[in-house]
Figure 1 (cartoon, rainbow, N blue to C red):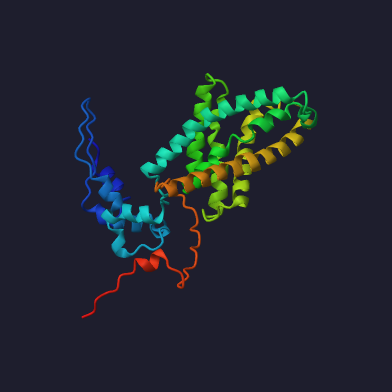
Figure 2 (figure 1 turned 30 degrees about the horizontal axis):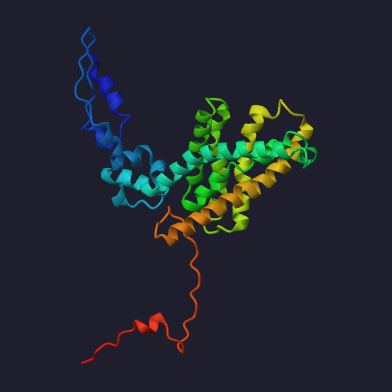
Length: 309
């Protein structure tokens, strides 16, 4: 049995508030371990006097706390409101749109890519495009547009992380579509992150051509490190990288940015005409034509005079 002096010595380290009411647990030296009820540690640490005496600096780290807010039941609420940053959640409609973009874009891209490869192979004899682009750069011209889904997602769902989620699903779709070949596509969400960063920096207020071009280039170059590490740096010389990056800038601006923005605007306009609200994206309202009072109009015909008493 532990001596009482040891228990008192251990109790002396506790604040005065608890030194009188707290009882040290007693242990038996026999084979059977006997434990007396321990104090409620959650109540102990949440007690305002414990924080003031043991952790005085930690208490004042949360700015804006009043004495009434230091009650145990309000500590978690205070920490949540002062420390945590809440991001806007996706609605069910927005999640459906993002999942649809992530699932459909790799399937569409695969068919379009096969068509482009066949098309350029057939015209290579008459159009010397291969001589000007330097051989392997032709493949970049044919696939540098495949991150347009990130810009499209940002146009339809104007919230942080929309493009990242859509392109992550896109990458997994490419990986499964190609028969588990190309594991670097599992990191395809970084392409969407590039588009998210641009529109986040613009505070989701600009969706013009310049913003779309920047988002497309960012989506391309957030993805470049992964594709270079997987099959570029050890296949081609360093002299290939310079022209390749220029090609990717053009492809990212036109293929990713303008193509994604064009599809997004077309979908928003089509949805507005049929009365369907797609995601959180909205097109700017067009100014209405001025009403000429001298001409009969539908507005004037629908005006009904009121009867006054």
